[in-house]
Length: 207
Image 1 (tube, helix red, strand yellow):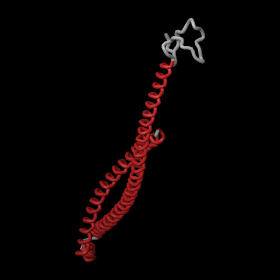
Image 2 (spheres, rainbow, N blue to C red):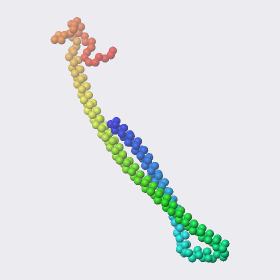
Image 3 (cartoon, rainbow, N blue to C red):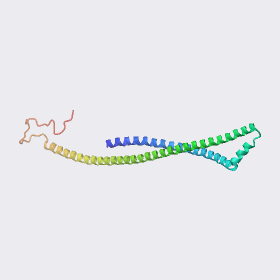
Image 4 (cartoon, rainbow, N blue to C red):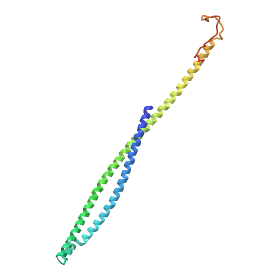
C-alpha cells in the first residue's frame, strides 16, 4: 500500500505538470489563432488593393500608359510621365512582393498551429492514459486497505478468543491453588508451618 501511495503521489505530481503544459499549449494555440486572424485580415486588404489595381489595368490596358506617354507636351513632360509610370510599376511589384511575403508567413503560421494542435492531442492522450493508471492504482490501494481491515478484524477476534482462553486458564489455576491451607498430596508445601502464598500464578505487579 505504501509503495502504491508513493506511485500515486508521483503520478499526481506528473499529471499536474502535464496539465500545466496542456494549458500552456492551449494558450499558444489561442495566440496563434489570433495572429492568423490578423494576418488573414491584412492579406484580405492587400488582395482587395491588388484586385482594384488589376481592374484598373484591365480597363485601361497598355493604351492608357501609351496615351500618358504620347500625350507629353515636351521631353521634360515625357520624362515626368515616364517616371510616374515607373513608380506605378514599382508600386505594383512591391504590392505583389508584400502579398507573397504575407502568404509565406501565413503558411508558416498554419504549420506551427498544426504542430501545436498535434502536440496538444498527444499531451491529452498521455494525460488520459495516466489518469486511467492513477485511477487503477487508487482502486488497488482501496482494495488492499479493505483486505487489511478484514484481516485486522479477524485477528482481533482471534486475540479476543485467546485472551478469553488465557483468562479462563488463569482463573482455573488460581482456583487450583486453593485457599492456602495445607492439604497434603504428592507436591507438598515446603514448610507445614507456612502455607501463605506470597506470589500467586500470573504476572507479578510492581508494588
